[in-house]
Image (cartoon, rainbow, N blue to C red; front, side, top):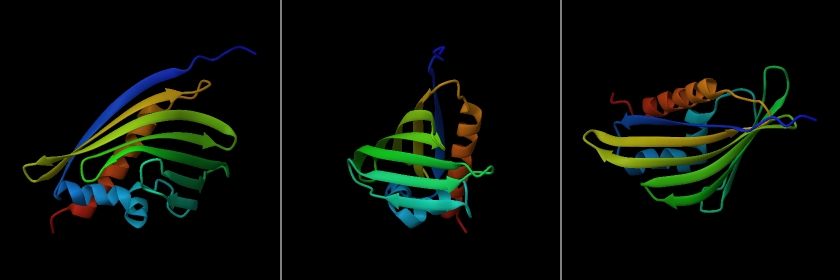
Length: 152
């Protein structure tokens, strides 16, 4: 069997929100709030559990378009309340592991609220690669997060 090399890439997304850093951070920490903005398969979610603490674990499972189960497992390594989250996660589709990522999210004071800096480093496995789609999906989630804090 021929070995398929692992592909590495990264991306950074910066967003500003009309809310204090602690409030934006809380939207990551609260399970209900987290699902409101981060769920990329609403209506197809099979499971979501969030143990938001250092060495805690988040599980997300959803049914894909063709019936395959997408599973995301996140493990939290560093959490500084209102300031920073560092976690790793993998994505599987059925039995196939697609990627493993390391993510740092920083919540910085800004003139009108918070500047959030999201940095993701990815390792794509066994020929899978969807960086443009992954980035777009992450940005869509952050668009939903921004609507939570939009000034009325």
